Length: 429
Image (cartoon, rainbow, N blue to C red; front, top):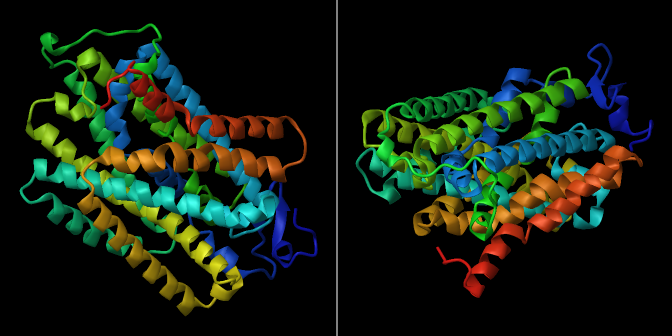
């Protein structure tokens, strides 16, 4: 933990775990000016980071594990997300850096692995952002005219201005609108429960069911709450920072996502039972409401794209500085920082759009970033970093448990599925 002689500590007044800026005294103006985000803004951005197009696959996941086990998984992994986010938020304060990032916190906890951590977060977020462009390319042509390539390039161009911004708080309006799109999806899925012909409904299972066939859908639950890459931006930007306020943002954000997940998953599964498709919207007739919902999902992932770009860009620039053997202070010049941000953003946009145009299978991208990058960000890093930084105690023991869980998850469902296919217990899909 930073000593009292640390210059960063001289700029703040301790408030519990959190370092609260004292506006009455001489302090770092740069740190104070960064704290511009309201709690509502933080909740919108963190909730939108959590909820993505993966919500469309939850009813199918419920069909494969049963209503009881599916509901249990939603609550289990939602609770683990809350705990992991709390661990990272507290770790950022223990590390004593008012401009916390995965790199700065990891440098205190495991300095030998900072480059690996930066690379893992950057690649994971890049993969998810690329998957969003693939979703747009697969969705918009079903609603409007135009080729898949055209819409991917148009989406990339339209999201470029948002992607060039420097603060997460700047995305609060688009994040709030995106949550409105998800709410519309939930209302449509719920309303159609009372309109679908009973003949379209398959078998429904309430009793928990889990077998090798269900293993392939476990990752849908495991990574449904991945948003940890943006918790440091929340900690850095929130006004009047305190442990209670940040924990409230975490709880409310995960609670919003959990409620929306349950509404879509339970309503969709209750509507179609075992006949539900991997994309719940494929079960519905081609009406105006469904077409509008598809368009809303496309806008949802478009507005979510910068939420993945920001942390990826931060980690990529930190990794580049490490390779060039520069310190963060070398980038303090505003013009240099702006130029680096613009160049990194442009490279990110061009690379992700090129891959999205070339790769048609969404599963190809998600299989690369899912069981590896998301596990590292959601489980291994929160548990491992806190364990290395915190003093002995019950929380440190629980953090070790989260770390071990992450180690077990990485080869888990995906490897189990491949072994089952090889042995002939499952058909490859």
